[in-house]
Length: 77
Image 1 (cartoon, rainbow, N blue to C red):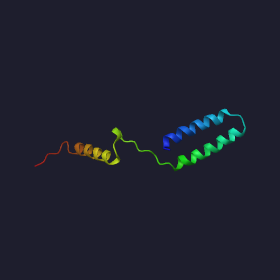
Image 2: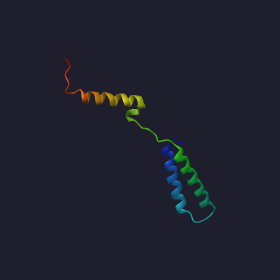
Image 3: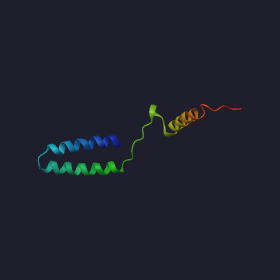
Image 4: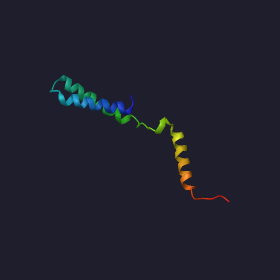
C-alpha cells in the first residue's frame, strides 16, 4: 500500500475507534491503528513530479530553466 492509502485508512480507523463504546471491537481497532501507524512509519514518502515526469526528467527541466535564467543577460563573443 502506498503512503496516501495508509493515511486515509488510519484516519478512518481512528474515526471508527472514537465512535465505538468500550468492547472487543474497540480493542481490535486499537490494534489496527497501531499496526497501520507502524506501516506508515516504514513507508517511504511518495514523490510526485509535474506532468507525471520521472525524477530525471524533472531534474533536466529544472536545469534548463536555471540555465535560461542565468544566461538571459549574457552575450557570447
